[in-house]
Image: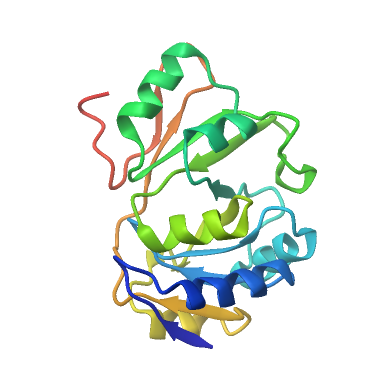
Length: 199
């Protein structure tokens, strides 16, 4: 099901419809400030398993998740003063931060290393979703063959297992920049939409 949604002012009833689906182990595609994401409620083990199946991901491939703000992010990732200053400067924005995980992160999202990837996107639809849901939203990029799917119609065709697509029009073609903050410095794991020259 494709549900058209306003990108700057997402309609509350449409957000609520998506949230009800997420609470029922649903999987949806949604716009972010970079590429479309595919995700589910972080607390839904079935939803997480479905995301892996829909994307045909390997079991050891990590999933990131979206938080609404820094206060929420700090529940799931360990943040010292230096990291907090950096996060304040770069969020909301097109970055994914790899942090040491706290105990709040569900086991289904733990890899061998106890780290997590967390985003606070600069996108009203994605933020409205996590605020209304009350939990972070698991996210992976809507890609096929290594290419971002910018057209919701293509996402619909490529991933028939998705329950709903929040259609905000064409999305971006460049994924987020991934920064590993678990060591002493900043390691650029993937250079994407977020600038790295000012880090």
